[in-house]
Amino acid sequence: MTEDNARMANLLSRQRNAFLHDGPPDLAMRKARLARLRAAVLAHREAIKDAVSADFGNRSRHETDIMELSCVIQAIDYLSSHLRRFMKRERRHVHFFYRTAVSVG
Image 1 (tube, rainbow, N blue to C red):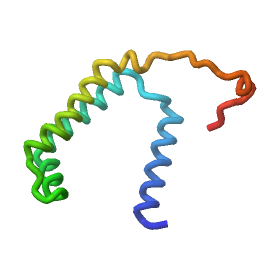
Image 2 (cartoon, rainbow, N blue to C red; image 1 turned 90 degrees about the vertical axis):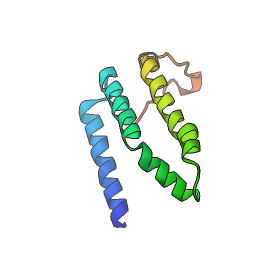
Image 3 (spheres, one colour; image 1 turned 120 degrees about the vertical axis):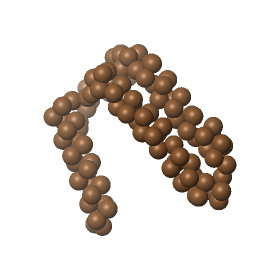
Image 4 (tube, rainbow, N blue to C red; image 1 turned 60 degrees about the vertical axis):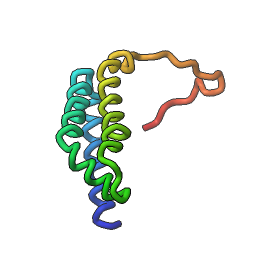
């Protein structure tokens, strides 16, 4: 296993253990995380545009702003405003053949 693979496996293990210990995040935590993501995207906007321009051979910074960054910001805003509804529990129909099955994990 390479060093990067080992680091990723360690990170995944820590995330899994944190989830098992703390459970799923509540609405306030999810909104706070989305707000932090939004702030990070805005704070690093120029660096992101520079990186995309370098990757695509001098891509227009305005195009990156409109096609990439604005879409991400709008998606974060949409998720934040609809998060409560997305978190609501939903009943799901289970086919007769699977009613005796159990979830393992």
